[in-house]
Length: 215
Image (tube, rainbow, N blue to C red; front, side):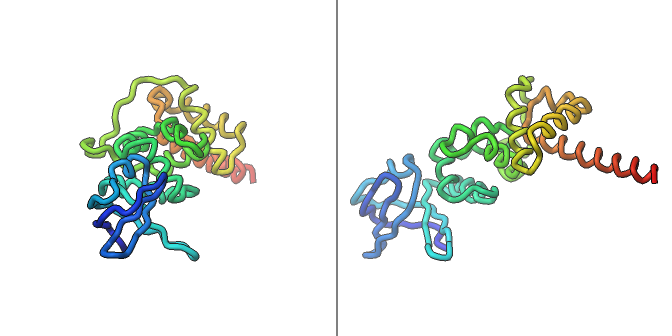
């Protein structure tokens, strides 16, 4: 694995840079922010992540190790590839991404070109517990009360991406939140989604018991 590159900047383009390593030019994809710090003829260091595919080896470069860590965690989300993960970092700095993932703020991810509500909901769901804001010690913030209109579309989108219809998703959310009004008030998408899925599991078990008793 190539962890970092240090050498002379030979070229800076719109989405890539070339670092001269003693006569070997290494092409690296990076965000506009990272590329803006590179200047042809000057020495630079980039932290890197090597993405291996059947037909290619692609390097992605980052200004620091925190950017690289967030990038690699984003890649763990189903449907998020390296270009989309890099696009997230182009729009948001690593700490903003950590806060959004930790607080269930799917709207933050929809600001990234190519990410709609369904993908944003999946990102929030799959990143739960994986990215924690620095200095929180893993303690979730206490958000102010928010409107159902702010969080419900994101939860519905996440559920439809998992196979439920919008009608079934909406009804299940309403019933689950009737049992947990404090979650609805806080508006944490990830917590509401988990609570709804738990409610569905419990409801399915109850239905099975009812069928069994009739038999």
